[in-house]
Length: 227
Image (cartoon, rainbow, N blue to C red; front, side, top):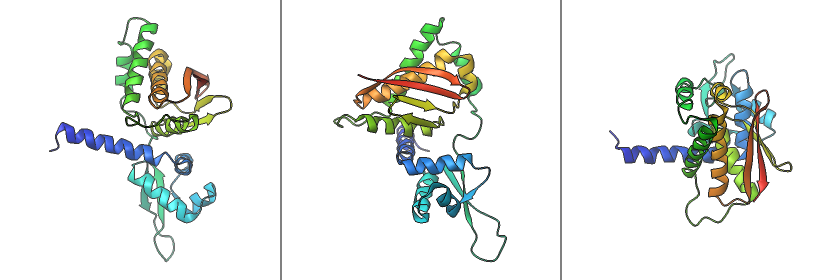
C-alpha cells in the first residue's frame, strides 16, 4: 500500500498531466468537440470538425486519453475491415457527487455572507498555491497567465473563453451551479480567490477585479484589470 507521501506525489503528477493536456489550444478544441457531440467520434470526424490534420488529432487524442479527459473505444464493425476507434469525453459530463456535501459546508463557513465570501476567497487562494510556478520562474506575461487560467478552469469543467481585449473571462458552465445558486458568496468567492491567486502567484501584470455570477443563464464573467 502506498504511503501518504507517495499518494501526494502521484496526485501532483496527475495534476501536472492534466494541466499539460489542456495547455494546448488544439487539445482544448478537441475536448470541447467531444463534450458537445451526441455520441463517440472517430479521428476523421474530429479532424473534419476541427480543421486539424488526422495525424495531429490522433496525437492530441492520445494525450487527452492519458490524462483521463477522453476514452478510446472500438466501434462495432458494420462492414469488413479494420475496427474503427472512437473517442468520448470522460471529464465534466456527469453530476458532481459532492454537491450535497458542498452545500452543507457552504452554509457553515461563517455567520455572515461577507464573512463567508472572505473565507471562501482565502480558500481559493490556497487552492491556487498548489498550482504556483516553481521558485525562480520568471513572471508570466498576460497571455501566459490567461493560458494557465484557461487550462485549469477547463480541467475543472467551466468551459472558459477569454476576451482579452475586453479583459473578461467567460465561464460558460459552472459544475457547482446548484450550490452556487444557493451560496454564491461561497462558491463565487472561492473561484474569485482561485483566479486572484493564480494571477498573483505567477507574477502576471493582470488582476481579477471581480467575478460576476450568472450575468446570463449559465454564464459567469470574471473582470480583469491592469495592476
